[in-house]
Image 1 (cartoon, rainbow, N blue to C red):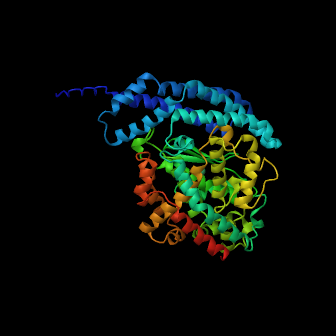
Image 2 (image 1 turned 30 degrees about the vertical axis):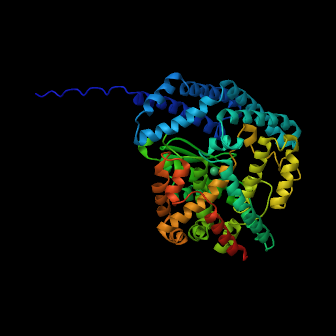
Amino acid sequence: MRFMAATAPPPTSPLSTLKMRLGDMNALHAAIGIMDWDMQTYMPPGGSEARAQHVSRLMRMHHDLFTSDEVQRLVEESSRGATGDDAAMLRVVKRELDQATKIPAALVEEKAKLTSTAFDIWVKARAANDFKSFAPYLERVVEIVREEAEYLGYKDHIYDALIDLYEEGATTADCRQMFDGIRQPLTDLVRAIAAKPQVDDSVLHGAWSEPAQKAFTEMIVKAVGFDFQRGRQDKAAHPFCTGWSIGDIRLTTRYKDNLLSAIFSSLHEAGHGMYEQFSPKEWDLTPLCGGVSLGLHESQSRTWENLVGRSRAFWVRFLPDLKQAFPQLAALDVDSFYRMANKVQPSLIRVEADEVTYNLHVLIRFELECDMLTGALTVRDLPEAWSSKYQTYLGVRPATDSEGCLQDVHWSGGSIGYFPTYSMGTVLSFQIWASMARDLGDLDAVIQRGDLASIHGWLVEKIYSQGRRYTPKELVQRVTGKPFETHDYLKGLTAKYAALYGL
Ligand SMILES: [Zn+2]
């Protein structure tokens, strides 16, 4: 009989202890994520008070654990001599720890209280078109965010500290460079399109069956590569994507009287979902898992929504299925449908904006945020500043503040510096697309023959499988061979719409 010597347990290193603590925090985050998902999908209205309490307690537990002396010490000790994935993981954790510890707990608490009230006031103010009742709360939000920025620190512009929270390494100068590059070409394009005859898309408006929309959107979301064994799609008032493991990613969509709304919001969220779903298995439940930044994330949602979903090739492939699901559309031909799906019309509401005008909506918010932070614009003067910028850039003027400066939720939640990531993502999606075309050839031909797996596979290899290993700027350079820039975006957008509108 032979006896095997029992292997000695590995000595506990600071790194292995740290990983255990991070695992605990990951579990808390998962609980918060599930509670939040449930709140936005199935929770009865009576649950909101208890849910808010539960979530805020769990968040406090997470914060206390994360910023504890023990974790700070473990991060410090583990960082010495760390290499490879461990070094990348520690970089991510250090950055988050830095953000979590720089801002005093009292300010964090004050902001949480303020934004919780400000959100309720904003909901009512928007419904009643009453900016005056929201203004004092927004004033305080701007003050607190300014304080936050001072604690976080910045080099050139106070806005740098804030944008960096959402897009690591991005600066105000980066945003300005992007918006300066696209401002004139976009306004010129919008003006040229406005002078052309507009497509009539009334056939897409109606009382569409919800089960049929659910079935159709799930079919296309599956076709682009979202794995329903490791995810699902539900209904929410404001579509979003969330998740807590590569094995469980949740999409949401909405069903409206415009048939395109569910289709494109499903594709958009599926783009976010796949970026999370196809992170490497060995990084699941660790800080290296998932998308690296909001801008990169948005580049993926926009890729599937716009570059794939709004292409003519995609509808050559899927219009027959759409007609089968909705027999009212039997007479529709692919060219007409393609025009309807890409109708450009200046409007007042960002979330309903088309592909061309969208970034002008974001540009307006970026300019206003910078001015509010530096004090160049007071909150009291915001409605007028908002309206005049809409007049200048889009040629439309809101009749009410509800369809003007009260439309977005972000400011009531204290998120200033977030908006530019929407534009960065859109611009970046074209840069990545151009890089993909160099590898895969004519992408319209790829889509038209139904080979979406090639596109999906390329994105998995180049982006999804990289998780948070690199900084956003490093990843962009690696994937596209150059730093972030607007050339591919302007070229691609102009070519598409020049053809569509005969410019
Ligand atoms: Zn998105």
